[in-house]
Amino acid sequence: MIIKSQADVTPAVLEAYSKIDDPRLREIVAALVKHLHAFAREVHLTEEEFHKGAAIVARLGQMTNATHNEVVLMCGSLGFSALVCLLNNGNNGQTETTANLLGPFWRLNSPRTENGGSIVRSPTPGPVLFVTATVKDTQGRPVAGAEVDVWHSSPEGFYEQQDPNQADMNLRGKFTTDAEGRFSFRSVKPAGYPIPIEGPVGDLLRHAGRHNYRPAHLHFLIFKEGFKTHISQIYTPDDERLETDVQFGVTRALIGDFVRHDGPAPVPDVSGEWYSLDQTFVMEPGLARLPKAPIE
Image (tube, rainbow, N blue to C red; front, top):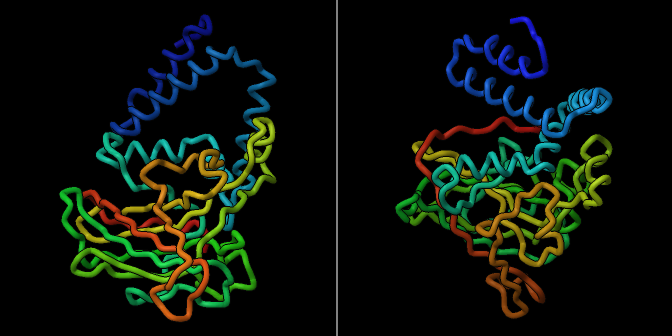
């Protein structure tokens, strides 16, 4: 098709890609073309702005490596990651869900830990946290025999890969739910932490006057055949950045009931301030599949 004016460009591109063999890929490419062209028309994108935008996209790729993914970081900072998660969980976005983002710090082979055991594997000062959680299906029945990975940052805001003072696999553990769908563990209360701002994500945040912090949270990955792998983050309600999460990950369903205590603890070696959390997760039927660890 010979282009006569700007109005001809979109139909020409759509026609050129209309014979893509894979129906789903064909649908996605067509929608991408329509929305991308509509965006350029809506803002009347200038040539200079186009070249600046292309340079930003190139830099996102250049800054992505085995230990950092600037593309995913940008998707999170634009709320795109959170949107995709919510569209694909909770009955495809129809109901509340405890599903959330994987984040960059999950590791595949966390140490197997008995229910009630501690995931503190090296001295980690901070308020002690006791967690009891229940995994259910969409009918409210307990999910027994599910494998549950748990990981989180230290009270100083560092995951163990980032902190030479923490032992390997500190604040990580793999549990198995019992006949009632329960698992439990001891840890320390996590802290929030900043995301990297050396690249295009940082530039965007500075232009917007936004901070670069994630509120404090615990990570969970729950796996059992017959169920869609359930990835979640449970946030502490006392974090001052709960409503301004740089990655837009906080939903009402993910704000945990972290209860502060000053009295006797479940074990004799704990005194003073400590916390407890009782949490329920709901798994949906689907494909049990483990993600690829973002950082090895």
